Length: 415
Image (cartoon, rainbow, N blue to C red):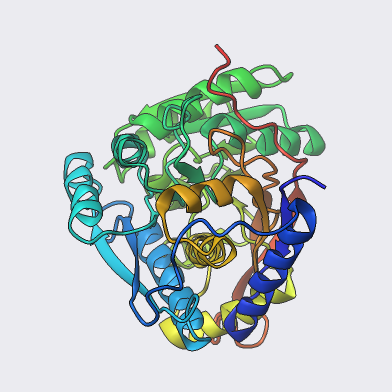
């Protein structure tokens, strides 16, 4: 049958039974699960994993939910008895979006704390630096954002994308939406850093190939006043403004576009809907689109989101769903292999397909760690009551308006 196991994982106390089922499936497929370590030989000793990401600065709006999602998963797993009788211990480090500091922190987690794997990372610049450490020290690193296509190389084996695909892949669903809606005038604002420039190149290749007018403006990462850039787009009268390439500016871009009288919708960068609503209010309704790896239509998303809100008093979005899923994948790898050795965890991640709670698609990886079956959604913010318990008191909720085809994984070996 091969070595790939499709295992559904759900939150709370049922996750262990799902992992056991995965082990049995592996045994049936490969003639027995090989135990390659001693994860259960130290009963009660914590298994150290890490969140390393942006808890302050421009990217904290994504980093904090990712950390909280990991916290919730660790709590669920430990409440269910841990992994092979051992609790998970989550160590947290704030990179502040600084690549040099992130490298120092990650090396400390590996050398002094003995972590077996890490999740988090939002900034592409941070991802580019930390990936080199993960590969050198052979410690699995699961990215939440950090979508620059330069992060993964043909030889990468210990770094994995889990929510946001490589930048070039993210333009495919937007291009599909543009064609489906018959749009012909497209504006864009990108940030002048690795992710923004990657999106710019992908737009020129993917959307530029369509029968459309495309105008791209480039702004600094810290920019908050986009009126100058939007005025340059005014003559185009864009039917869609792509803010995907400027994650910190997506909310201000949408608000300022509306204030300037631009009537087209704005598509964001997997932004936090709650932050968008704080910045836009009613201006977001029916005009703010965004990409998503979390599927708000799934019952397991709603169940998980209700528990997340009860714990953190916040709406559970893409980054929190990804953080939760990262911990489940690491835990399942340890349980299934009987090993907490980083090399064994990485091998299991490569060989397994994960159906994670709240996800829009199965998570499975190419040899170099790219998402092999990503199928992002496009959602729009609507003025409507959320499902019970998901975001009590809110008067808005995302609605899925477009489901992309499965994306072709970006191949870093392709010129």
